[in-house]
Image (tube, rainbow, N blue to C red; front, top):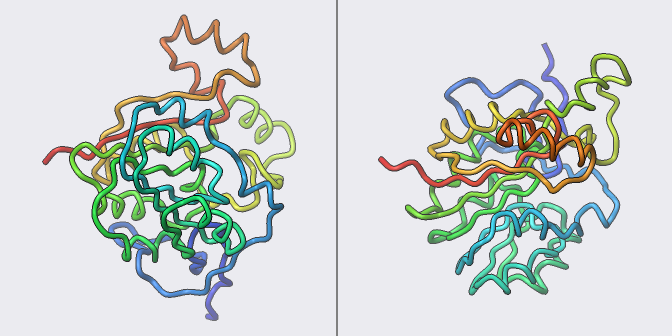
Length: 248
């Protein structure tokens, strides 16, 4: 039987469409890198909304999927002495190199092996859903963490009520240029799935959140008060989480 065609990814190495077997890792596997063309503004998003939610000050920062470096100003104003970025899109990597201290233009699965030392903050802002094997990546990020490292992740929430209604009664998985049904999304997560991935990778989730307040804003405010924030599992299109390394 001939091999299945390779699937292109935005941030990850393009592997065969076979799922990664349990207990194995795609880290370090060889394969062609294919970047699906996107509009320039796709890589230029300022994620200060997410970064403000994280808060704090950090000396050494790793920005996975740094795009054009739009977050550099926030990092500098919050104590950054060194910012390392990883970006697979060559044009965006050139732009980010002008404002970050070092940029590695490679998939995270390859770049992680050339990183040195540990980081105070590791940011994966809307990255993991683009990867073939985000579970292995999350685990490997522990190699560049110390006991107090903060891992900050944002990702689309497939349990978002409008998304569920769309799948059940509307257009289904009709892929688009951006949003939950972005055509480059390979993996989909609920809060429970994200928590499981972190625990399996050696991280402990410590705080969950969501953007303030966007779609369904008035409904979300009311529901948050009565559910202690758990209503965001259904009423927010994004998941925010910060985690620390599990203590052995």
